[in-house]
Length: 620
Image 1 (cartoon, rainbow, N blue to C red):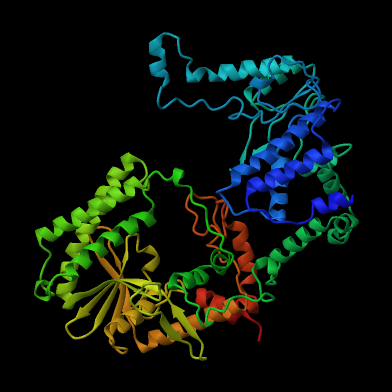
Image 2 (spheres, rainbow, N blue to C red):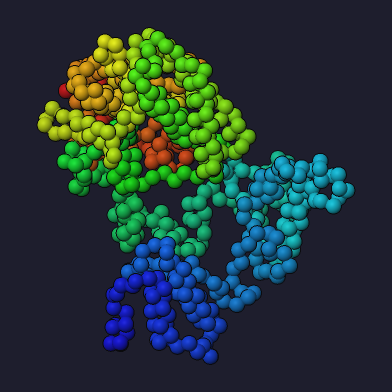
């Protein structure tokens, strides 16, 4: 025992191979390497363990050298997945598809999912080799439409392999809120048992047919539960009185915490289960050395819950590029930004006398040059596999090129109308290697927010005024209400004033008049949506930033989902709707908690109309 304690004391390893050798020596020393007389199951288990341990050597070069704790967790995970066979062939439970069970002699058979549309499957034609082409070879290829006959033969064969077969089908589909009908073959079997024809697929009440209205009803109807989970659930359902105080809940701490969570989220209280982290020390956005981008704060304005997961816990949404048929909107935007930056940077590198005057138009040579830059960028994204399917990329590529050409046409009118010249492209501030330090925004209470970012373009007017332009390649739908009277749209649009301050610093004029705008480049009609940076706008953002900083410091990270919606292809917030099933539950929770005093400051920022309505309804 003393040697075992010494041998297994915590230690560090230089490589995974060293850790594997050490573990293998322990196994051989304490278990031996001669399995003579061992039971067959023990021999298989020994081989599985040795193979798993030896396989750890392959981890060198992938991760850091393991500690003893990491080695233990890795072994636990690997060995847990190496289940192997239990018992002997011909005994126990076999879980398989219908085809795998043909030819076996079974005591009982349970066929689950025997619903129309599942059994038989919906037979879709093969897009590469449709049935009309298969007909041409005179029966040498099976038709896709004949798969239904194969399914029926498999079902009949598996039913014949046992003296007792149970066919099970769901009464409904919770994903689609629709009713499920029993398979046509279930109806045929029922007709054979009852020796009568069934009309409309309604099964009669008989000894061979039972139904359950729900999972709960099935558990309560059974003489004894089939698993520990069903045993606990059954005991809980049959427990009289208040469930959270029952002996079942007290015996199962996990269940008690589940009750606490459900009760908290359904109440009007703002709890830790809803994003109330007031009891935790969080990073201070105004601390010295802290910089952030305006879009990061925008995440808190649109949904504090998203801000918590994305920017504090670092939980990102996992993208699946294989699902994309065409180039992503983000990559398309980066192409436009990159081409325009390279093009304008080349223009600004020309001698002063060759710079464009406000009324001067881009030439055919300029149009040819931006086309050449676009082709280079297209090739770069194609080589990285980011452009989607070829047939869609052919269209997207042409659309992006048209968009770049239309930007030049719109720029001709913009410079002529405003009397402005291009001053700077992609002004980076607050970043490593950037041209400008971080933009410092002093709050009324003395705290300071430091911002980093990149201004797409700065124009300088003949009267000394500045125009800050931020390219947007998508729709302007979410920006239509943006104006000097509503410059932040509930704390969700924060870039323009920060970029205006960066532009002032770039020209060295702290009080220069600045017009900041989003430039929507998609379509033939170029559109600017923005406002002048006035004292009133700055006071508004003083209030917005103070509310945000106070909310983050107070640990206010409530989920703010969009209005109640069902499952949809486009998910506006993956943190409120992670499975794409809709926000109906989260939205009801939001409605129950938005009147809470701890949430009031955020509600006044995000939805001032609703906040005012709640204030008017509050008792005096």
